[in-house]
Image (cartoon, rainbow, N blue to C red; front, side, top):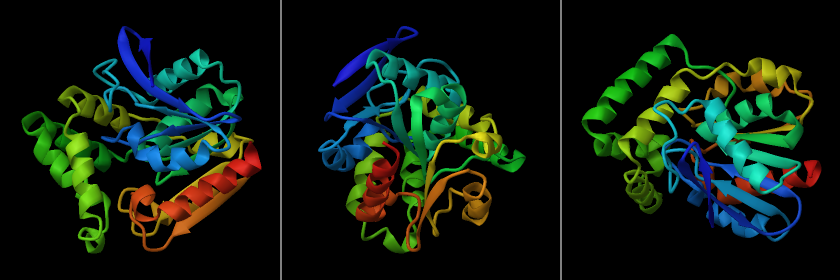
Length: 263
């Protein structure tokens, strides 16, 4: 476990294992701890790097707006410190947005990348307005937002089954500073459309999507998958937005199999 100074702010990251490198990035209101069980497995063969993105987990806020490009710069700073030359990068949800921004800025550091319940599209005007409303809610009562947001990432019919993990996520996410929640929302609201990046990249891309995911546009799956020159796609029929909890064996196997191909 280590810290890096980035613009006078502490950024937390962990490194486990030896070999070719896999970078795992978490999503909005999460932390690198979501990857713990995956790391135990992957670190048997690879050097696994996990990073708490700004304002999340043990990392401090860097700015009032955490754009995807700014967070990509944070990831780059960590990899530079670790002397990483090439890696596979996998991002869950917002972490996928950061992965795309990283691929746009630092493609030479990637052997491939994965979008885990994530996508390449910018917010629509309606989605941007929804972000604004969410920011107003967080300003008034951050905990109430977290307590409603986290369960909404899972299909309603599995809430009872995953009550323990949901409660744990709520508890951990509630520790985030209000500034961190808002800075990430502001960054996602204004993020760039990365469709062009998918169309021009020569890097292999892994897509993991759940058919019951209300947060990622499954209807536009083919548009994304067919854009990349080389892609693997794993579609989880009964899964929502949290495959690392809802379908851990399947999603770990997908990442492990993709890593064998590209590393």
